[in-house]
Amino acid sequence: MFQRIVVPLDGSCLAEWALPHAINLVNALGIQLVLIRVMEQAENNRSLYPPDPIACDAMQAEARAYLDSVASRLGGLGIHPETRILEGETVDQIISFVRQDGHTLLVMTSHGVGGISHYMLGSVAHKSILQAHVSFLLVRAFNDQCQALQECHYNRITVPLDGSSRSECVLPIVELLSRHNDSTVDLVSIVPSLVHQYQIDKHDHRLSNIQELQTELKEKIDGYLDCIGDRLRNESLHVQRQVRISDSPMSAIWEATRKGRSDLVIMAAHGRNCVSHWPLGALPLNALVYGETPLLVLQDLEPHEIEPTFAERASAEAWGH
Image 1: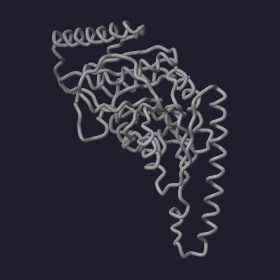
Image 2: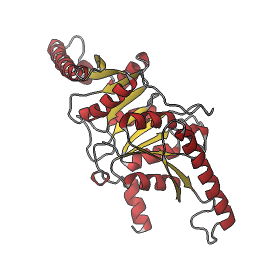
Image 3: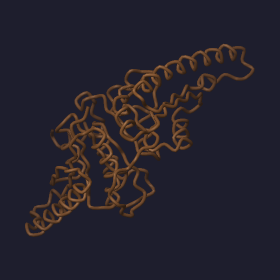
Image 4: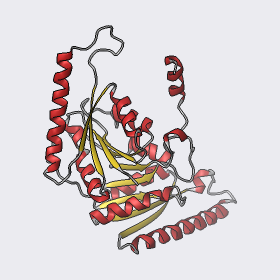
């Protein structure tokens, strides 16, 4: 599944909100934790003058001391992370590092040293996650108070499924995390409202046929979730399920996570209806930008299988790559 968890840290309390989640994942999955700190030169990269070597050495020493301090705190919890200092543009370095190993899980917070803003995602998190093309856990960080370093706990894990095998790729990690946390797994499927989708008026003679079709579709999804739930219960997991009909499947899932007080949402990067050469389908992209709960997304495509965006192609042409 994964061979390592990578957590970028920038020295802020906001970035450290990722650590309790990383601890949980390391203990549940039994894999290596890697902490990285990127040193970005204060001068513009195109400057004719090199950076002050004394200032550079001081920055490196500060970054090393910080990572060593975090590693020492984690050591007190029985976790001994690898630490790495990278140099260059922050997002580029994060992307390059996590792509070195295709079995990497990137764990980072929505905001970091830039502080809390009215945007749901800071620029580093937004760019890194959308361009790295690896599995990721995004932790919402809207409290800049430093917290005690300890393992977080997931009482309830929400798992949206759409009936496709691609959406089911999350089930192995759901089992591991649920067993480690003794969590309740909440399986959720949202059936799109056909009446709304086809704009059927209540006086339309086709209404009864559409409603009958809607009922059959819901029953099919009900049976599907029952099968998944039975499989998980056979693994001694606590499982609940819900199937809902909604005009807006995306908003229905977020409503379900709020009402269920979900601690973690786990979903696949792609499902039944998706553009397979994009890094994320509509649901995980919506969850990334507008969700309120920690979000774990499993990427089922390799970086080379994802087509470059128009901006990436234009940038490559401009720089002659």
